[in-house]
Amino acid sequence: MKKTALLAALLLATPLLAQPGPRGGQGNGPGAGAGAPAAPAASPFVTYFASLPKEPLGSAEAAEIAFLREEEKLARDVYRALFAAHGDRAFANIAAAEQRHMDLVKLLLDRYELADPAAATAPGEFEDARLAALYTDLVAKGKVSLVEALKVGATIEDLDLADLAKALAASDNRDVDAVMQNLAKGSRNHLRAFAGRLQALGAPYAARYLPADDVAAILAAPRERGAVDEIGKLLPGTGPGLGRMGRGRGPGAGAGNGTGTCDGTGPGAGTGPGAGFGPGDGTGAGCPNR
Image 1 (cartoon, helix red, strand yellow):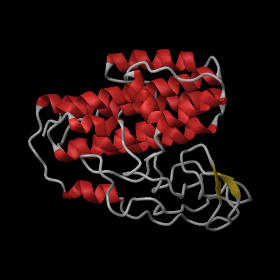
Image 2 (spheres, helix red, strand yellow):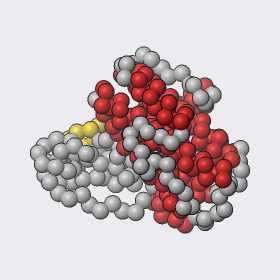
Image 3 (cartoon, rainbow, N blue to C red):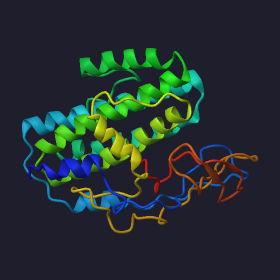
Image 4 (cartoon, rainbow, N blue to C red):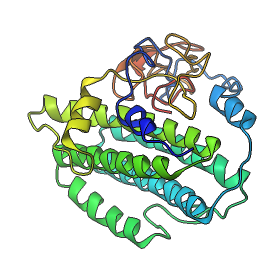
């Protein structure tokens, strides 16, 4: 089901599909009490994904899925390196979201019995030579300063969205489209987070891969919440106000589970055993950065 209209949905998701609402983010700092975390409920998207038909997969689509797996790993690895360099929590939070993006692509690799290019590679290692070179370049640039690191983050999300737009235009499998729509939703949220920080620091982000008008429209739209289907429509049960709260872990008072802004950058109140107050890290199952 090749589509031009879906590109607009990919890049310019409207508030009608995703209205802001509170969301629970699982804290990963110490909480005031030590309790085993509750077993996670099945993800609404995973349930939906399992209901989609397994369709014939062309060689070009198979190669694109493998590339997307490594491209999400690139984002995760770069953000982890930049968190180590600057200690800015946003990079750790969004790196965790990129791991979930990798997990989404892994659903496709497993379903179609494709080799996983990220199965045995260390941080910064890639089978794709372009991504390997890009990792080295982006980490070097991002280590210069926090502003440069935020520019690197915005650039990665810009590139991801441009690549996803091309891949979505060529895809005709519903399950592949569904995964890519959710990757794109997350990348738009991450681009908003990085660009918002840059704007506040007086260094607004300039589009590099997407058209400037598309980037401006993404940044002007509110953060998107919940999982979506193959055409970008919000899945039932994942809309505003339905996110689950995580549980604090570890002894002592400290950061608990975020129940406020769940973009990996905002404050959240602790809940569960030993509810400290600290930053919500945007890693909960109901977070928009999944």
